[in-house]
Image (cartoon, rainbow, N blue to C red):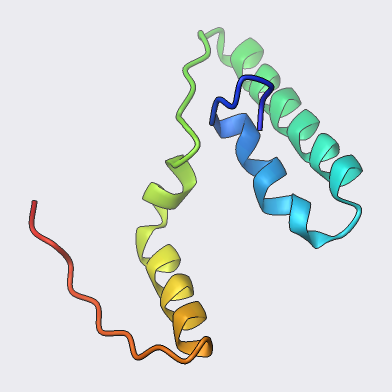
Length: 87
């Protein structure tokens, strides 16, 4: 996460990589890779940067996230029956 606690798309890789082991170094490399990839695309397409937000990946793959979290709860011994809430 960034110093101000701001959750952005570039902070997401550090969150997903950090529990795996050599946390700080791997997280720094993941964030640097994300920034370089963004910079490449901005320069090659001659566009301005628009942050997609920290939840971009979760929203894009909503069903995958739901299934993963359901399996985690079931492994903890919960019986899970999900129905989508209508807004």
